[in-house]
Image (cartoon, rainbow, N blue to C red; front, side, top):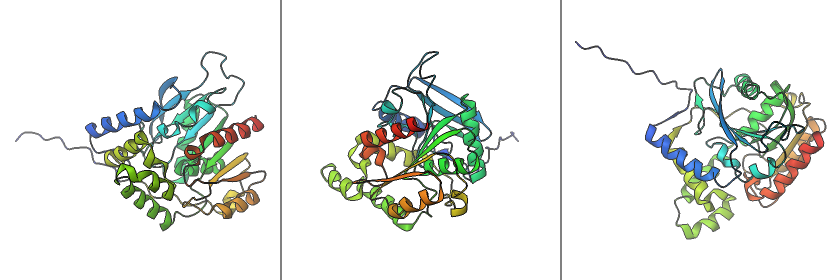
Amino acid sequence: MPETTARPRRRPDVGRYVSDAWRERHFAACDAVYALGAPVAREQDVETSFGTTHVYRYGPVGPAAGADRTPVVLVHGAGSCSAMWYPNTSALSADRPVYALDTPGDPGRSVQREAIHQPERAARWLDEAIAGLGLDRVHLVGISYGGWLALNQAHRAPARLASVTLLDPGGLEKVGLRFFGWLFVSLFAAAAPKRLRPRLAAWLAQPVLVMPELLTMTRTGVRAYRIRRPAPLPLSDAELSTIRTPLHLVLGQRSLLLHPKRQLERVPRLIPGARAEIVTATGHAPQIDHADQVNDRMRTFMASVD
């Protein structure tokens, strides 16, 4: 009988694309979103113990460009990729290097080989990725799930961190049904007639619905990629109180991921010197809804740390 070759067994805890065709279709949608932001100066792959991390470099180039400014590292939210930073890359990279990471396990160009959703593994992956870029000290910025990654890093592996900026982050409260309900309704709203989407976007505080490129990227990501990761558990009061890295917390007034007023009081009380603010008229995407305002606040905070 002819020999047969067994297919490699799929890891139940590692994300994957459903097919090469859908992966390429999603990459094309991502590239359309990247084109809305600053030009990418360079792309590179960084090998870690958990897979290959794809990184986009923005900002000043040349031997001395931005040499006196601490670099910024951006970590995106779950189910997305670093293209989501298109409203922020131009402002943040005006006078300092910016590195946007595709998190392994999400629909970007990174390739996951080991699970990283456990807090210790997540901190090790991010530390290895930053070290692989040759960076000793960075301003770390994370949104949503990326906010949990940044917060977890400040707690477990802060040695390379000059500061941490959290944009409507995970990691402060357990993800509740109201957030999943918002995601579910947003998914159906994306299928609504185009003329109705602006009204639905305002009602849901969901800017994806009125950005065609972003909407296409989100749709193809859901279809093309299988995320294999549970929602992260929040940090306790005791864990938060260990953080000494300068921290800036930006919350959306209409966020359904957490309770903004509760965290506005809690985080500065537990983390010495932490700054916290609520951005009005926005939900879970303050860096998109109010890009200029949030960019200015982030740049001012980073400059004060430098």
